Image (cartoon, rainbow, N blue to C red):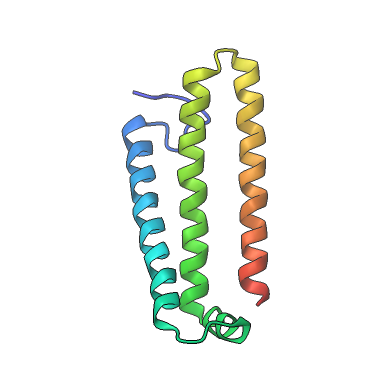
Length: 115
């Protein structure tokens, strides 16, 4: 069993499950966006703008962004835990990844809600 302060849930099975759930959400979001593109005869800025004005699309986009961050964190944590043996270097890299992911999420919120 995984016991680490930087693990997402502190449990390897739950981390694995969160990563799989996030992958499903990302897949559904991708199909949703491709479905919109496929069903829209004229795709221009005005159409995209109108599409992303809907509160449901905004919330689904934020959920997809959270899923991407969850998926990325579990993956990066696993890679760093497996391949970086120095505890100090691993913690430094984990903190850098957390900061980057947090900033990416803030940018995603700013983009989605500024429209």
